[in-house]
Length: 47
Image (cartoon, rainbow, N blue to C red):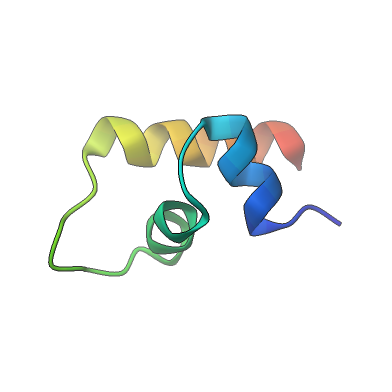
């Protein structure tokens, strides 16, 4: 099973960034669309 930390390592971001990007949640500091795409692509690659 792939974890949030696995996706974070693959995408080169923090695990909290992955959590926000995958959960599509809003935060005080928004995630750039390019970062969100990078996270989603990493998650897709890892399955």
